[in-house]
Length: 522
Image (cartoon, rainbow, N blue to C red; front, side, top):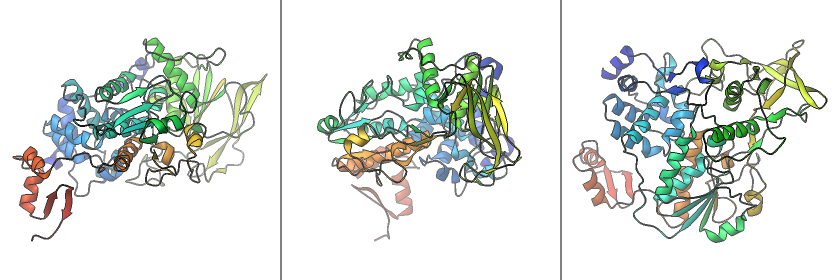
């Protein structure tokens, strides 16, 4: 009844968001956490479901009901241990993950889901504030070395996990700082970059090496890295943009969204005194004083709106081919527990701009070689794959800057992929069915392997890949290598421990291979 009472007594209370009129004047995080009592009450809304679908909704398999319950009881340090058991970087996912777990929450069937993402961020924030999160370098080194190409969430996760297993890991990053698109694609208003720096410093203290401004294939060859290391992991993301194949695409003032976001994130870094590359003369992309049209309605497009408004755009219009949302906010093609592709509003739309659903751009118009307008039409359909134009719905909208945010096709093939001779799948991703590529000793994970996805999926990819690489290097793939006696001693006295549960159940066998599963009592 405690859980039911919590759900009935406490309505959903999300992040405390700053006034949109205030926050568009700076680049600070646009939200904050509520007070501790509110957070505990939100944890108490978790229904302790018999079948917690949030597990399935989370690519990491986070132990969500477990740490919700611990927060409800005020046992924050134990909640942090549960959280870190499955997630290396909850400060990232707690800030920028679209929370598919919440869409899969059983409460979301006919009520407001648990604020899972908020509680996750609160737990890790408390962990850093209390000093519970400290460097934990491995006690034993294997002597094996691994090179990781790319420092996005997948690259960071695979590096962290392999380092814990005792291998010496070096991460190679072509940009000036680690983080991948978390650093250069996500606005500071969503993820302040000191958060990334804090985690990177922790990884460095644990023994991971970072070589930034190192473009593999240009500054160092892939073959040289193979000679340096016992294994290589390709975690370069999916960075080839999907093209908008319409007349006028080559006009000045038409850019991919990520070109604009990279420049804006570097501009903020310079404002804050952090290292950042300069924009080459004549290549600056600015929204200041302009009428901006964003093509595409996903998170990247929303980040473009947010940055354009902070930069002082005159107006921002987003054209999204997806159909309008029903009153419920959940489209028919994404019933519970699937996450919807679009939401009624976002942090960016709260700040300004306009989103129009069911709109397809057919042409970009220009004068003297520069964009002046976009031409489009209304369409019907559930996605870009089955659009049907609506007769007589053509429109023209003025535009000084057009930003294309329709996703990414596959990883870049120039550089490590081509140099190493890696096989590709039908979509142009690195073919690595169980993380091993077509080249012995070379592995792939994250968006480079599966295509464009979420930050939480990238972390999960890195963690799983690390187990495969560890086995290749002679390890077990498991992180804990304690003998059974040490495991028992460590957990002795805890009624929730594996030892106690095994003794009560009498159906679990413990050995050097950790838990081998249930069997009949002998």
